[in-house]
Image 1: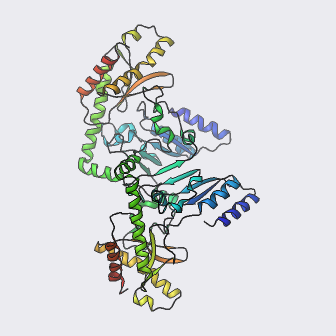
Image 2 (image 1 turned 90 degrees about the horizontal axis):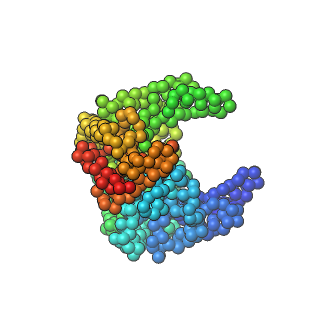
Length: 276
Length: 276
């Protein structure tokens, strides 16, 4: 999000008599793993009196890392945050959280006071009955999985896990940077553990830059992924985005992944794709 | 739902210029386990051109029983049905379904065609990518649990399980009917496996009918449940509803429950509550 554009969009909307009421910033986008400038966005929200929400579904895990937490600076100014510990933290699907700054707000919004579900005349403290506070009243207690893992690993354990994933991403990034048969989608170092790149078989490298080359390049990733799925050794995702044709997106969230696995992945891409 | 009242409510709303668009019928209410008259409601919906939804979250399981399916007659005329196999079928939490009659409708309503999530250029049939059809794109594959259980038990296995639960409810119903220290909330046989009743300790029996007795009766169930939780042998829920003070609701969904357990439950209620 370009904060100056956010500001001018809000002012334009207001001048038309519209009433903007909330801004959804992202900490860790799905494809690129990019982080919005949260402090700047918070300033704009404060200035215009808007609710600030941060979608940290993917990037929230970096809060556990002293090294990488800086990317989420300003998140403490948000009115609400979503965070999916089943993404970066490795909690088994599904474990999604919504955190709201103002105490009691979720209860005020969601409570139905259905006496047939939550009896007020109990012998224990009824504030432990969380159903009336949550968006979906009856749910699997998915947060318990995170709690158990946190107890077992500690914040330090989660931190080293997160750091390790980002180290792998950096390792892959520097490897790709040195090669001519691979091309990074962005020159800069990844902010999260997403590394986006194209593989260019000899034939495609030899086509001059232009629409014909783009068209051919677009078909490379799907073909390689098909072969990966057929052989069963590796699998990574790909997608096009805006003006960019199909590119691979390698995302590290499994703390067991090692540098040898990254090396193997590139070897496999070349083995399966060099004749394309 | 009283179908004649539904019809007059729709006509009243229309006469005020309002536009009713859907009717939510219930097959198996939470507290009483009651079934709405689905054929009559379907007639009214057809007449007025309204969407008919059946909330069969709790009652849907009875469709597996040749004996009890009749209670859901007319459900086949609904435009949409919700059904939670984690309730009556014993599937581990959480397993919820929404079934829509018109093919392709969920996809039309929910698809976002996010190319970065669902690539159309795959080597397999992409109709297997269900994310764009579902209300919540990314989910735990909870329906797999039901599928596995169905494979293991068969429709016959589920049927005998459902029938057994309703037999237990009937057994409890006839037991309570013969006793003077218990009182059924409804005289009629339960439609589902919910049995609703009051326990009347001697002291309460001796209070003449009226507000004083109601006030005392209201406090009996919470006190007994507290003792149950402290002792740890039995636990059943209670709630007030409309003009009815706190009553127990015994719901059978565990196929392992036996008649001896029902006997034990009543003995426990008397043991814990007779001095109240």
